[in-house]
Amino acid sequence: MTTQEEKRYDPKDTTLKFVNRPDDLDPLREGDQCLRAEMSCGHAVTPESLTGWCRSLLDQGQYKFKCPALKGGTLKCDAVWSYREVRRLAVLTPEEMQHFEENMARLAAAEYCEFKTCPGCNTCVEREDPSNLSVQCTLCTADKGKRYEFCWQCLKTWKGPAPRSDCCNNDGCINNDIELLKNCRTTNLPQVDGVDACPSIRACPTCGQKVEHDKTGCKNIICPRCQVEFCFVCLKLTPECLKTSSYFIPCSDGVAPRQTSIPVWRRN
Image (tube, rainbow, N blue to C red; front, side):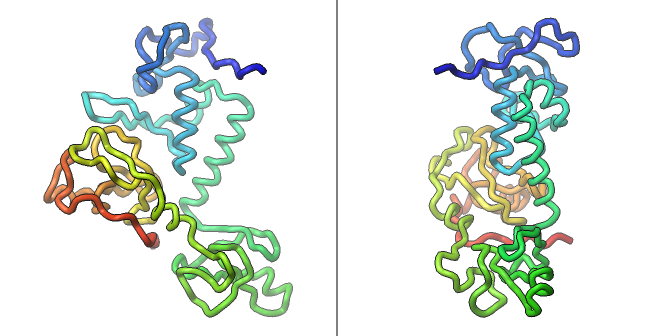
């Protein structure tokens, strides 16, 4: 059984700037056999570390690739890399490019509208009221000659009274995102005093996007969808949290309990 060969830079590639210093995305990497190249922000990477980091961002629902390396001690770089730069310096394979581009398109579309596949006709339907799980499909309604609605949550033909925001009357209709928030593991924030048992997944208090903390830097996080900064520990917006606390000390109200509902984002 063979393993996939590790990606490496071509030392003759004059379009890249090679540097003789540790990989900023994987500083504990052993050995100096793999060339490191410099990103536009000035941090050093290898194809493997860059691919791994950007893939993890996609898995977290983020399609904008930001540098996680530290600068000035405890501050994150947060420079945004273009996909073109990532594709080139990560030496993405055709299969990886397809995976990246499909997921980037899906996540970007989801940022501006909510749509799912109608179980009746398999066409994409956009939800107009984010607080109502009962959604009408106009195509099925026209085809059947009567109003057709399906459940946005379980994707089955709607059963029961409407509108509703929790579930329909179909068996097994549960909100998997809420179950994830209620049952996710706990995590710690090594650089924040006293935070050693915080839920590892939170819903943004502004738009409801699920986010995870990368366990570096302070306790605050910027939501990748609505770009609002909030405290991952107490779930207050950062300006409110900082009235009685600071970036690297415990929140005055402690760790907020696991969330049992998800905020609805009402865009202006």
